[in-house]
Amino acid sequence: MNNKIILTGDRPTGRLHLGHYVGSLKNRVRLQNEGAFDKMFVMIADAQALTDNFACPKKVQDNLYEVAIDYLSVGIDPEKVTMFIQSEVPELTELTFYYMNLVNVSRLQRNPTVKTEIKQKDFEQSIPAGFLCYPVSQTADITAFKANIVPVGEDQMPMIEQANEIVHTFNRIYGETLVECCAVLANSKLEQRLPGLDGNAKMSKSLGNCIYLSDSPEEVKKKVMSMYTDPGHIKVEDEGKVEGNMVFTYLDVFSNDELIKKYSDYDSLEEMKEHYRKGGLGDVKIKNVLYNILEEMLLPIREKRKYYEEHLDEVKEILKRGTVDARKVAGQTLKEVKEAIGINYFD
Ligand code: ATP
Ligand code: MG
Image 1 (tube, rainbow, N blue to C red):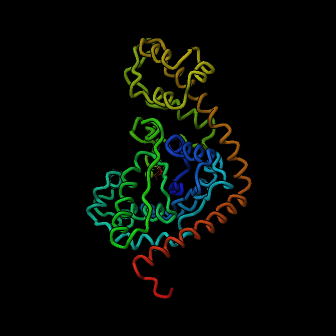
Image 2 (tube, rainbow, N blue to C red; image 1 turned 120 degrees about the vertical axis):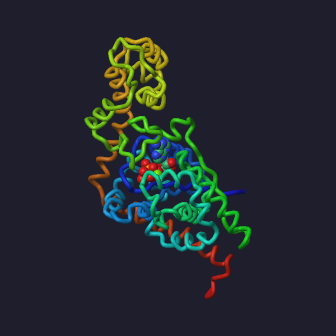
Image 3 (cartoon, helix red, strand yellow; image 1 turned 30 degrees about the vertical axis):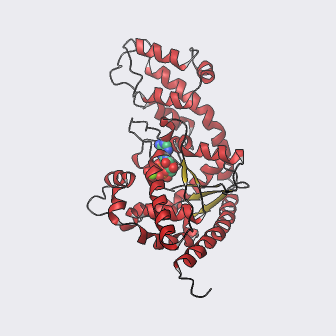
C-alpha cells in the first residue's frame, strides 16, 4: 500500500493572506486534523523566494517568522506536522542540480505560471536562471519527501505537472526511484484562485491587493471599504452588478446563510444580492456585512498570533526540530537518487 505523504509550502515574501487561507491553508489544517496520512510536511520556501528576491534578502529573512507564525495561528500543529526551512535542507539543492539535467529551457519557458510571473516582475529582458528553474527546485522539494499529496492553489498546477514529468524521466533513465504526486485543490474555483481586492484575477503579495491574516481590525476595515464593487453603482438607488463585484465575490467565499442572518437584515446571500441588483442597497452596507464576517474568522487567528509573537523562542524551536526531521528524510531520498544514478562512490 502506498504511504500518504503530504507536502506544501509558501514563499516568505510577505505575510500570508486570505488567498493562501482559502486556497491552501484551510485544506492543510483539515487534512492535518483528519489525520489520515503517514507524514505531513510544511516548508517555508526561503530559497525559492530568493530566486526573484535575490537583491533583497532582508525581505525574505524578515518574513520567515511571519509565515511560521501565520501557520501556527491558523492551526497548523507542530505535533502533527513537520514545519521546516527550505534553505536549511541542503539535500534539496543537491537534488535540484541532478534534476536540472532532465528538463530543457524551452519547457521551463512554456510554464504558464512562470510566464505570467516573468511579465509581472519585468524579467522579460533578462530572466534570472535560478528563477526560471524554480519549478525544478519545487520538484526536489516534493520528491525529497516522497510526497504524493500537495494541497495548492490553482496557479501551482503547472508545477505539479512539471514535477511529474521530471519524476517520469528520472525513473525511465535511472530506474524506479521517485514518487509521482497529485495536487489537492480547494473545492470551488474562487477558493482555488481568490481574486484581489482590486478585482485582479489573483490576490497576491506581489500585487499588493491582499487582506493579510495578521491585519488589524482597522486595516481590514479600511481595505474592505476600498474594495472594487460596481463602478456603475453610484447612487444607492442605482441598480447594481453582483458579478465581478469583489464584495459579493468574497461573500460567496466567506459567508453562509447563518452569518448573513447574523450580520445583516437578510435571510440569505441570494436575498441580499437581489436587493443590490434591484437598487436601494448601498456599498457601505454590503461592505460592513463582509467586514463583520471576515472579522469573526480573523479574530481567533489574530489572538493565536499574538501568543506566538510573544514566544518567538518557541517558534524557533519548532522550526529547528522540524528541519532536523526533514533533513533525515531528504537525506535518505538523496542517497537513493545517487545510488540510482550510480554516483555513490564511497558506499
Ligand atoms: P508571491 O506573489 O510572492 O508569489 P503568492 O501570494 O503567490 O506570493 P505563494 O507563496 O507563491 O504566494 O503561494 C503559496 C500557496 O498559496 C500556493 O499553493 C498558491 O497556489 C496559494 N495561493 C497564493 N495566492 C492564492 C490565491 N489568491 N488564491 C488561492 N490560492 C493562492
Ligand atoms: Mg506565488
